[in-house]
Amino acid sequence: MFMQITELSNGYSRLLSRVDPRAKLLAAGLCMVCVSAIRGFDAALAALLFALVLTFAAGVRLQNAVLRLAPANVFFLVLGFVLGLSYPGKTPEGIPWISLDGLELALRIAVKGNTLLLVFMAMVCTSSVPALSHALQALGLPRKLTLLLAFTHGQVFLVRDEFHRLHRAALARGFSPRCTMHTYRTYAVLLGQTVLRSLSRAERIHGAMLLRGFTGRFHTLASPALGWREILLVAALGMVPVLICLHDRWPL
Amino acid sequence: MNNEPLLALRNARVRYPGAFEPVLENLDFELCTGQRVGLVGPNGSGKTSLLLTLVGLVSLDQGELLFQGRAVRTKADIAALRRTVGLVFQNPDDQLFSPTVLEDVAFGPLNLGCSQAEALERSLVLLHELNLAHLAHRQPHTLSGGQKRLISLAVVLVMQPSVLLLDEPTNDLDTRSRELVGRILANSSCTMVVASHDQALLASLTLRQFAMPAAS
Image 1 (cartoon, helix red, strand yellow):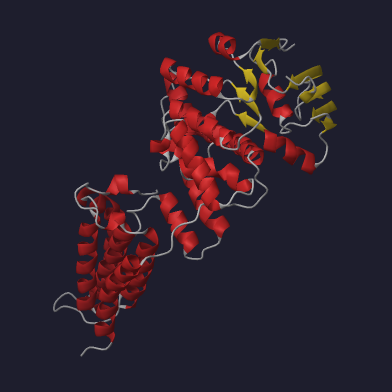
Image 2: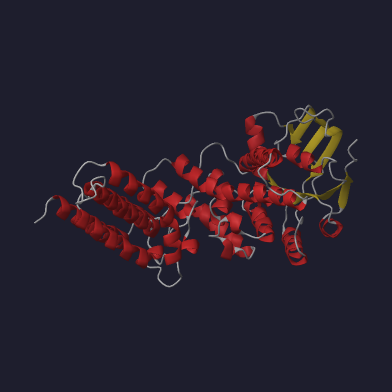
C-alpha cells in the first residue's frame, strides 16, 4: 500500500517532510547500503538508534510505525525460532537444542530489518507518490517507469472505488459472504467486473490522452535542480550510517 | 458568423464492434464557427457516440467526417482536428490521469509543443481564472465530483480550442457547481456542442438544439 505524509505524519514535526524527495531518496539509498553492510550487533543497534531519530524528525506517528513494523517483526520472530533451533554454534548449558549463535543472528537480522524499514518510513514515505515519481525521474530512472508509478497510484484508487461500489451493490441486495460456492462465485464475478471496467476505463483514458495531443511521448514539468541545502543534508544524513559502517568494519 | 461548416458529418454510420445495430445511421451534422448547439435525446440515443465521432475517437462505418471543409482521413488530419476541437468527457475520472492537477492541466500544452515554462504559466493562469489554483498540487483522485468536473473542463480549455464538445457537463453537480460551470461556458468564446439533459443549461448556452432519435 502506498503511504503518504498525510497518513504517517503526526503534524508536529515535519522537518524531513519539507526536504526535496531527491535528497531524501539519495540519503535513504546510502543509509540502506551501509546498514546492509553492517556485521556487528553494536553497530546494528547504533544504526537502529539513528533510524529512530530520523523517524522522530520525520514526524511519523508512533502508532503507524508500530502497525507497519508488526508484520515484519512476526516474520523475524519466526526466523528467531527457526535459526535458534537449527543454526550450528554455541548452546546454553542444559539446553543443547538451542543455538545462541542462531538467536544472535536472528536478533541482528531483526534489528537491521527494523532499521531499514524505519529509514524507509522516514525518508521515503514522507513524500507523496507523485513527488517520489518526479524525484526518481530526476535521479535518472527511465521516464516511462516513473510515470507508470505515478499513473498507477492514481488509478489504483479508482479501481478500489469501483470494486467497493460493486461490493456495496451486492451487499445491498442481500449478499452476505460465507464459505460457500455462491460467495466464491460472487467474488469472482465482482473481481472480473472490476477488471473489465478498469479495462474499459483505460481505453477511455487513452482516448482522453489522444485528444490532448498525446503521441506516445510523455512530457513532464521540470523539477528544479538540487540546491546546496539538499546536498548538505544528503551528506550529513549519509555520513552517520557511513561512519557506523566504517567503525563496524575497521574499528579504531 | 461564417456559414462554412467548421465540422461536419455526412451520411455517417457508426457501429461498435460486436454490436448488431449501428448507434448512428444516416446522420448529417453541421457545425459552423460561432454556433452553439445543444444535443438532446434519451439515454442510448448516441449523443456521446456523436461527440466521440466528431473528434475521431470512434471511426465511421460509412460516410465521412469533414473538418474545415476537408475530409478527415489521415493521422495528420486527426491531429489538426484535435488541436482545434476539445472534448469534455461525461465522466471526469476518464479525463484526469496525471499525478497532480497542475500536471494534468499542463499535459495538453506540453504535447502541443509549448516549453515547460510556457505550459506551466498557461496552466497556472487558467487555474487562477477558474478559481481553481488552490487545487493545483492536489492529486485528481482526491478531489470531489464537482472539483473533478471543473478540472476536466480546465484541462480542455488550457489547450485553447476553437470548438468545445461537452458531454453532460453538469452531470452529478450541485446547484452551485452547476452555475459555476454554466458561467465558465457562457464566458467562453468557443463554438460549442453541448449534450445534456439539463434544459436550463441548454437554454442559457445554446440557440439551437438537435434531437437525437431514440435507439431502436
